[in-house]
Image (cartoon, rainbow, N blue to C red; front, top):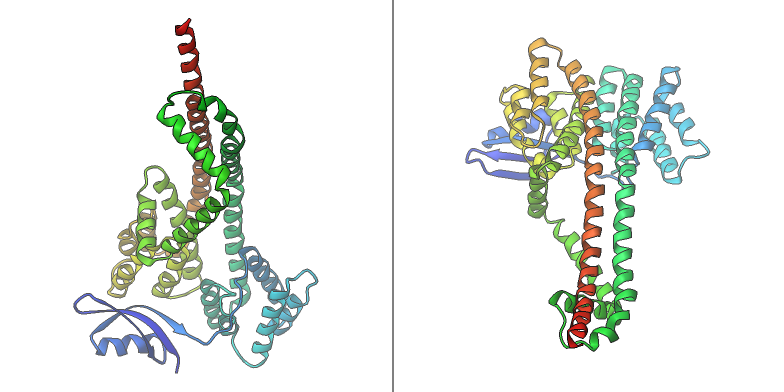
Length: 399
């Protein structure tokens, strides 16, 4: 009997987590109800191998090739064999695809074989193929997943490409500041040593320059330790929750991030629902693709509402962090009976808007970083020139 890792809520509203044996999700729900618990989320717990995650672009290629071969009438075992024998395939991928072929020959379903590969295949893909196996539309679902991951890879590529210039600017800022503090400012040591007094800003700059020159190793180690501490702090659940909540509430940037989060969820929900998955399962899977813990936490209540008979539009509309028009689009789909078409249309529109949001976000970062660099360099120049001009004025007054 499968084991399920679940999150439930008791009559007092307190969340309860645990692991329970059950025949299926319905059986788990009934067992918990007998104990006065309301099931919120569940996930089947399996003994899985440890595999590295397959990158989005590679997932798209795998799905595209699998769909093409299956549509041409090639058997699933032979299709996986053809894919795993490609010359340019990565060694790790060859092992995974070969293991899929071996398990399927033993009578294991493709979705179960994927699930046994650990983190190699995303949960979304496993659910999609499991639904396709039940409906007999594996080739069509593979094509849909290929399109899904191609769009996701395109969006990720656009984000990484758009961040190249800001990263270059950031490196330039760091390099310029280090050169000024380690090579330029030390040249003024002898000059400033002859002056009776220096402005506070100049004293601070010269002290900082002296520290960077004499204690660079200790400062480098301290900076590395500080970065590691910060990374560890942001792994704390409550800290991540507060951080993600603040992100979507930031002026200007928050609205852009909300568009990106909504686009991710809309595309996933559209793919899952169009493939025939129950809406509760689609919500449970789609929540993990958003990329924001604060939004993810709100899905517990939304899923509970849908289980209780509430409309999907009302449940999604109650989640803070999604753009309002997404819930409105779902409402129209519910009223017209074309929810799958409206979800697909909404996903397309939101993906376009997310691309525009990324461009706008980057266009804001570039001038902001230039201004920061200008302020830093300007402050250094003023702090250096001010005492020099002061000494000239003193010399002139003496004559």
